Length: 299
Image (cartoon, rainbow, N blue to C red; front, top):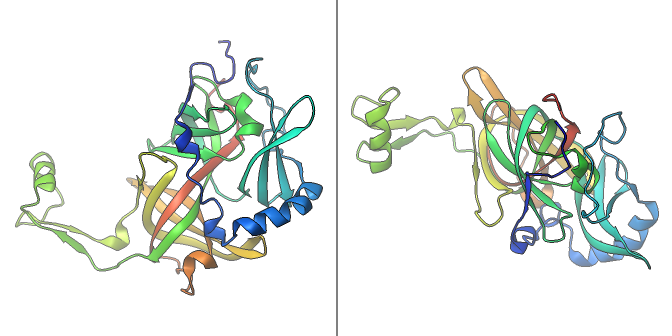
């Protein structure tokens, strides 16, 4: 089957979707610091290469109508700043910048269902279904480098990560939903298993694992709640600020657990300690992702 990249998959999203801002607030970086750092960053920047770029995979043909662009990253390959550049006849036009990381959780056989592109077609919100059936939307921070691998019906191995904007250690006390709650009453009528004898429902927070969209206008934002399975303090730095990696369970399907790596900073913790393994953790995140191995579904 012949495909053109983005064919039958991408549509233009509202401009406001790509203007949520706040990329740097989780890292405690102010705008003036970014601007002062630009000359230094551009001098050390290199053209971004994803895992896709460094291996032999055949991209789909990119339509001539797609705008030209390239992505620069600095200062090191593991983490830092991504800068989107559009070449013109006279110069290179700087379009934007956001945090760049390479640490995340690998999810295999992610079926890509939809791309919403920025009006200039150089950024994308990606909606895909993970192998366990969980549907998520994320901002592809490497879209300028991996866009030629997206097409209708494409299936990829994807790296997902969450930039934490707000966080708290989860409440361990169970929550009891009364028997008279109208929403849960309807659930009980169809699936009475798990409810208490009096019709109420007890939710043990230490067992809860969820990821829920938190904004209709900015679909990459989610609320997560789940037990911590791994903590890596000060795994790397961005602008001299340590970034901690906290892995949590975000969904369960029987004995199978889906995990997500979260990037947590001192600006978010505000003096609070990092959670311990086994502790429930709640966070508001911006979900980001990028293609790791393309076309694992047979394309």
